[in-house]
Image 1 (cartoon, one colour):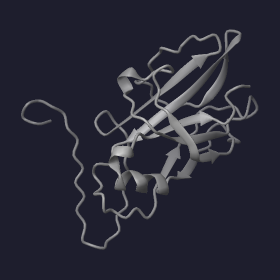
Image 2 (tube, helix red, strand yellow):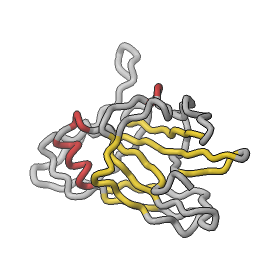
Image 3 (cartoon, helix red, strand yellow):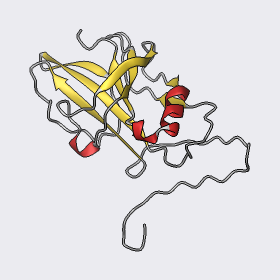
Image 4 (cartoon, helix red, strand yellow):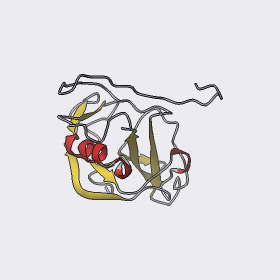
Length: 178
């Protein structure tokens, strides 16, 4: 917290030239953003904001005789990395929690958002656009607690070199219709 009471998070990375560092970046209220959006087949939930949820979801769930489709959004602030940083590797690990593989497949895609978004206004009707080009496919999980680690080196490298293009990712089921 600075002298005026403003909360700011600063990351300081000090390393000798030509050295390799490994570190973890986790989104929090000051250095990232996340949330999920839902839409029921009857149009309900389109205006709900789930920015304070503790889990990210990509699901198609039967609710009261209808279906809800859920997408998640995630973005990391990479300001701590200078634009001339060489990214040797970057991975995103998603932790499984409670999916029943016998109920339906949950194979998904991680897509790159192509427009900015804000946690405070995020809803199904106010979601960022995304591109399917370069989407990362995730095969369906086979257990309820299966974790998935994705190679996101290419995208993180792009974002480090061009920070203004960093709008994060959108996690979606491969099939949002059945």
